[in-house]
Image: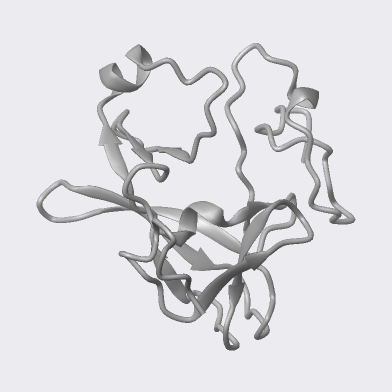
Length: 159
């Protein structure tokens, strides 16, 4: 299932495996049927405060970054797990849920939105915040009938 030489193998996830994706590069696939609401795992990685993230030069870097509501960020590229390889879809079958623990710690959990079949690829709607960039520069390859053509956050005019 998981390649022991993979940098993510130190934090394996149950019920999923990584393999070639028809959407983009590698993807995460269900090893068995997963019920709606199943927590696949936590999005793991290096934490950055808002100040650290703003100071970092992200240009031309492959990023696996999730923003949290407290302004901090999780970079799955550093110390992450296979959740970072979940591809984008405009009609996703998973969602990212921010959880705040009693001690104030926040984390992102990846949860199924519906029942998934064994072998089905997991997907998230990235809803990228592209600032003033052209959303068309963040082309979507999901192939969904509801594809909006971009991985960017939909505008207020879009459904």
